[in-house]
Length: 137
Image 1 (tube, rainbow, N blue to C red):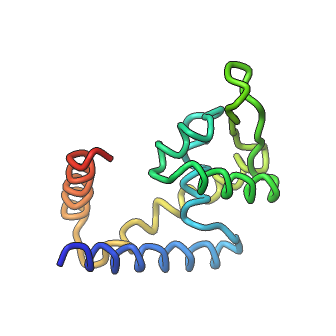
Image 2 (tube, rainbow, N blue to C red):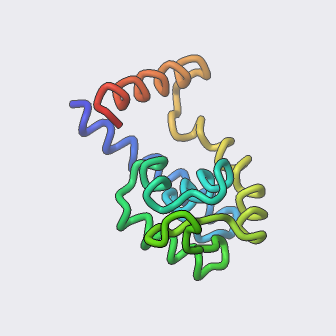
Image 3 (cartoon, rainbow, N blue to C red):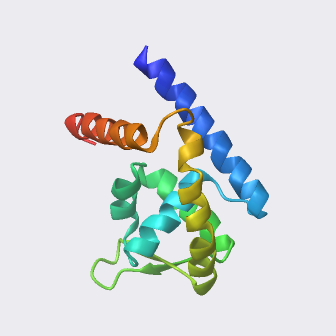
């Protein structure tokens, strides 16, 4: 069943990520890294846009942003355009950590899909992206 296999693959992905972060001496979750990665690509995103970008709900993004802010990795500021919106960006420490971890995270992608060739991994990613797009995500 695809759902069961997807869940098991997600578990493997999380385990591989956790092991890489432990080896790097960092206490960072996949969602925290995804947020940092999105903010590295697009500084100043508001929490709602960031939630859409990483496929999480706004409440989760708010809670994770608070944890990253307490770690000194992101700054949260009120939007100049919309007083209800909170804009996020990486701090200097956040940019440094992201720059240090991004190559490590890129390197573990093959470990998340063991047994697949580079071409098969690319096909897999393309198919998953297509399925998500068809589902409206």
